[in-house]
Amino acid sequence: MRVLHGTGLDRAAEFMRLNGRLIDRRRFALHFRGGLPGPVVAALRGYENTDGGYGHALEPDLRGEASQPVPAQHALDVLHQAGADDDPAVNRIGGYLASITGADGGVPFVLPSVRDAPHAPWWQAADEPTGAINPTGSLAGRLHRAGSSHPWIGPATDFCWRYLEDGGIEPGPYDALSILTFLDHVPDRERAEAVFARVRDALAAPVSLDPHAAGARHLPLDFAPFPGGFGQRLFADDVIDAHLDALIDAQDDDGGWDIDFLVWTPITRPEWRGHVTVECLRTLRAYGRLKP
Image (cartoon, rainbow, N blue to C red; front, side, top):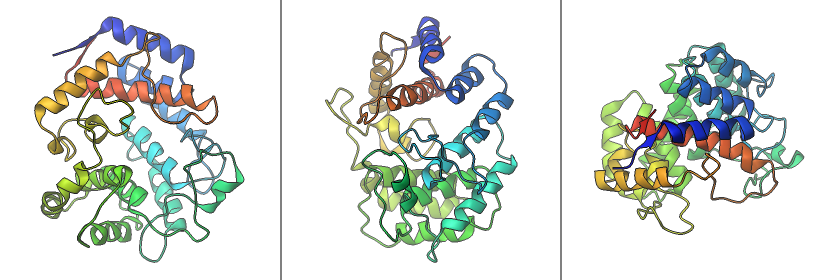
């Protein structure tokens, strides 16, 4: 079993100083250098809009100022990591989501306003976007995790249950990730277990089990970044162990971890690498593979 020792963490720290965004440097300090949560939340404030949503490249491939649904996921994660699930920003996010939700309770993947600013080519909005399990499931799951009671959660949760109980779902990888987040945190645990038992094969279908597969975009640790959730239950222990070994090996000479998707404008690579580096280290620590 491979372990990342303190020298690897020190190399990652120097990488973050050289390349990371302020918000990711502060997340690194919070998780690995005894930093305080306040500066993390303060850094997040710069990405918030008056409508309660988030833009300004919090999601690096959305470069515009306007709020979009997916950056709200990042914001909820940052607040959760900072122990700030009770921050008023969580309720403001609920309000923003309510303002863009359709009659079916679902949130679109991306809004047409994406066309008004630079963005990665895969962010394509329909003229009249409809609710989608990605990101509705991810957002509902995160708000459940935060213990939020915002009125948006009820219809969004119903939307997710209808999708999951419709039968014959064939989710893509990001849909599967959204479903797993929802099932991990929705309060009705008995119902979540029953749904997971029925759809687990469909959730695992987009994943490559080979830790050394060239060009593999979606690996087990993407679905199980931390132990204990439904994602971990998709894979045997030896599969998780092999991918943790590979994750340690993937640390670059500069101390960071790289990305394996399109860099469409130069700034997105270092921005994503800083984010990913913190997340890789959090995964290694959660599985007991980081020994500072």
